[in-house]
Amino acid sequence: MTTQRRSYETGHKPKCLVIVDETAEWDRAVYYASRWAIRVGGGVVMLRIIETEDQNQQWLGVADIMRAEAHEAANAALDRAAGRANGIAAITPERVIREGAPTEQILDVIDKDVDISMLVLAASPGAEGPGPIIAMLASAVGSFQISYSAPCPPLARPLIVHRPSPSARDRSRAGLEPATPEKTMFIQTEATPNPATLKFIPGRTVLDGGTMEFANREAAARSPLAERLFDVAGVTSVFYGSDFVTVTKDDSDWQHLKPAILGAIMEHYMSGAPLLADGSVGSDEAADEQDEFFNEADAETVAAIKDLIETRVRPAVASDGGDITFRGFKDGIVYLNMKGSCAGCPSSTATLQHGIQNLLRHFVPDVVEVRPV
Image (cartoon, rainbow, N blue to C red):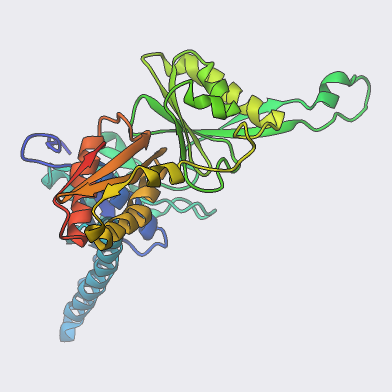
């Protein structure tokens, strides 16, 4: 495959190729690709491959009947997948049906569509292996000029941090005396679309509901964990989600910051200190609602906008360590709060203008434009 990718050139837009096959994992691949399309303002191409059978059975038109049935089944599968993508991202994917060997057809589709910049395959986590298509493509991945993603949990290797319990530290381990079990904390890290932000998953609940953002050291005074993180030189912002902590840095190197951040998170949870200094379990939801602005005559429109943000947008951006909340609506313009990894993200403009704006305009005709505040 030698065709040069043109996804990000003027007049083009990036596309994600999804293979819709017979495996149980196709839904995960469609979900992943649809979220990606929202984030970057791209498109989705869905490919169904009909593997050719023995064509010697031409008598009585059996081969033609089998081929027609295979195409009917392929269209039904693409209907389901397209409906799933539309429900997630309000997009209408391109549909392609090919006949032949899967690997050859996948490579040919990519070669002929210069806007395809990512191939998504969902791998099975079971003992039977990742799946036949991934196994066949494994040897060809080196020739790809596109990103190759096989989303199967876990997506990132967890970082394992051990802290011995006090009794284990203070007690002698001479002879055959059994050692006291260590307290172990698994902190998983994930990259986000914002290169200045990392997502840290401590393996436990961070907030029972909503989100919280600490944009500076003064705001962090209400949270012992945020204060610890701001003590790390280079940290400029801290954000809490339901089960993750997002940290944003300045120009410092992650290689130097990451160990200190992991240590701060571990120390906080091992200390038993509350997340908030006053012991409350609140979030920024109430404050955000107080800052909202819109005309009462638009209350029904605003309710529809907020429902779409709550059910379609927030779950998608939370997986990337961020949050987007409603701020206001005026003259057809929706104003949104960008938090966590979404704040200052290089791709946030594309996310707003192509992903969220298209979503809202599709379902709410009164929406003309979407802007960050």
